[in-house]
Image (cartoon, rainbow, N blue to C red):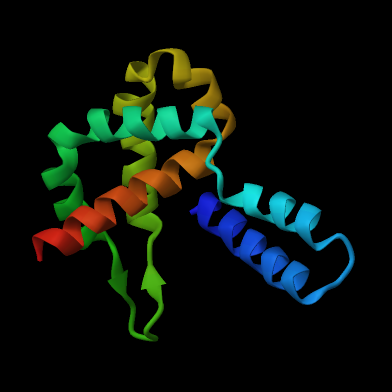
Length: 126
């Protein structure tokens, strides 16, 4: 989720740099570095994959149950957000080990990664 925004900004900068004539090589290198995932994020993502795997089928069911469109066509996500928050607090955080403090500082990133992982598993199962 957050990584996608960084990549989009990096792509924008890369395209802008390619069209400019001022220091194009140096700016291309800087813009290209936005695509690199920091090592701490990558190791936490790997740990999340391992932690969530046993619970993935149930989480996919809950996500499908709790996400719905109301009568106005808007996606209602309050129940799913509460359930995902509970799962993070009770299951994920106690098992993150050395990544716990890092994950607590980046809860939105963590929740986004988990939601993306669960959504991907749900689309693959369908």
